[in-house]
Length: 102
Image (cartoon, rainbow, N blue to C red):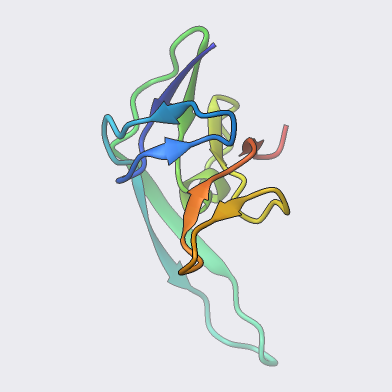
């Protein structure tokens, strides 16, 4: 499996593999009217993401992952308990990727 990084920065896994950015996928969002203290997020079209390619997974932000139903997208598992952070709390590496709805 080939992983291509479409976030604006390098993504490193805890095992030492790093994936440099090769583009940036973005999605605009807006919010619905607030009703009873609740609103919903409405996503626009995803921009900057190539068409699906066999044996290729695209690393994207969690927001782009949430906005898509594509099966070839993953996002860094930055909320996982095994995420490595530096002394300032910045993420150094993640243990794995997460997928959207299968």
